[in-house]
Length: 182
Image (cartoon, rainbow, N blue to C red):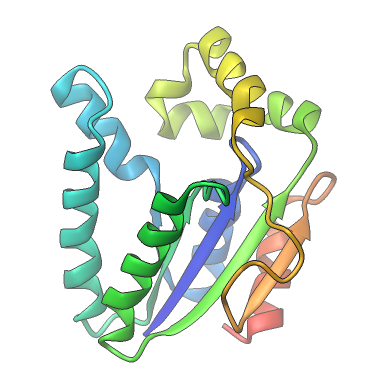
């Protein structure tokens, strides 16, 4: 069992790179919005408690399965202890089943991420991002959190940081696969 975290700021390409990585490795993609969007639809707004509980069911069942592995994407605010605790929680679920862990951090400047915010793929899979004015405001307000790690800060033995500013998602996925021999 393998667990691949893809982390990074909003609209950096986590889901898109994860989709490409899933295609070439056979790992299953569980991107952050796969739980966020249905919860928003059902509850009429964001409900973090419900999202976390639903994810936990999926993590526990998947980690106990005979699947090859999972790619999970999320924004990790390095200045928020709750995000450190959440990452440790997920890792713990998979560690109980002997999973190998990998972490990929994608980085790109805000102007590139603002362009990516309106891509067809993003808007198709993330209904909550379709209000582009609101979504752009959210991206511009990310300065309230530290969403890019400091050198040596990410606590994974297998860690890769990719500036994917001018890199197609397919190329980033191949780099991840080849670096970690996935």
